[in-house]
Image (cartoon, rainbow, N blue to C red; front, side):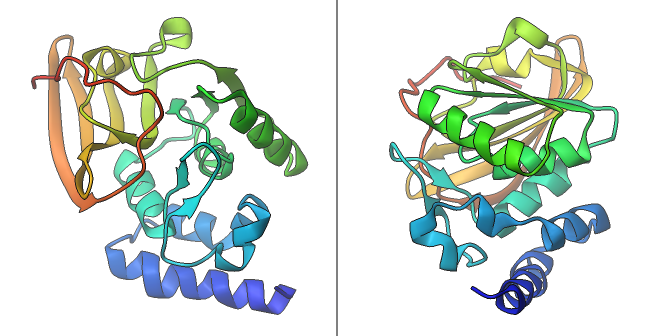
Length: 220
């Protein structure tokens, strides 16, 4: 795509996909309207970088559609001082958005290949407040806890209790939970030492993170 085609496609993505999907947060709209999404997308799908679709990555993983990313970011209300945990790094695009909204990002993926790809993409775009780690954070990631924000970049069969307990008091978590073809995007907020609130945001369908077992279901 030429520079003009990219500019037009990105504008249309915001105005025809993201904004009509009830995303009105100016920070999120401005960020996604400027971010070079096409430079993170696998080369085979670069012409579809701004399309309303989940884009395949390696190992059965998917890059979320732009409107899903935007709705989740809006729901999290990320502040400039927030410490963020991303469960599933993918290609690094969502990681880069989180890094621009918050203070620091710890992004964990089970795939060393994806972590390496994301590191290359982030380095090329000068994103320097991200720590990439390889491992399974779906069961919680205690190393840097507590986190102000947690986002799961991929779906889970149900929400693990340990992940919710990694939040600070007042912290927010978004995850897509359930089984195909109908899954639910949830916003969880920790409102006390042993108390959480939950809000259903929307229904969607997204490839699961690998090797996720049915964990103990979290009870609010």
